[in-house]
Amino acid sequence: MEWRKISSGSSRNLTYVTYEYHGEYIHAARIMGTVGKEERFPFIKFALDLNTSENFFSIFDNRDNHDSVITYVQLLYFGDIFREAGIRRVFTVSVTPDDSIAPVNRLMEAVADTKAIHAEAFSTPDYDQARDFIMSRITKVTSGT
Image (cartoon, rainbow, N blue to C red; front, top):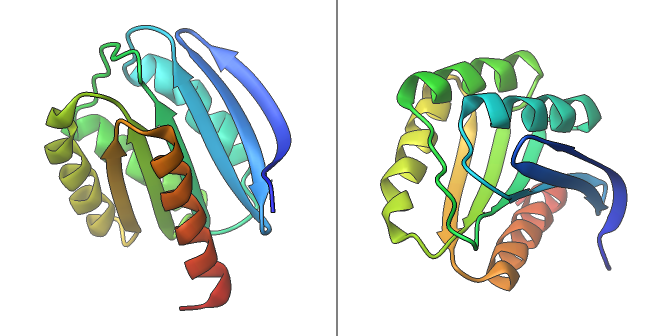
């Protein structure tokens, strides 16, 4: 089954598309320049406005290795937004050649845990691997395993 395009948009230094796969939405953003809270917020709002379940699936495509800055305080802020939107599970992949993102992934998972949100964050330089990760998690949550 292929991903079906639902909507698309853009904000400063980001373009994004939401797809549907097995009844879940996948929010994919392509980073086109330096990204911080101000650039992320419109994408998060766009995605949460479309999202139809308690699951949030996302891919941040930064294969061009632009600066992508997120702080602990910003993670707390986004965690509150996700919780207020009814999100209980977050599965996200960063597609990047930068292997220093692993500690950020762990911090995001820890912050989500403090918000009673299950999170799995993963990074890879391979977009196909990112797709496979997201599809495997969709299969997991839709099959109840």
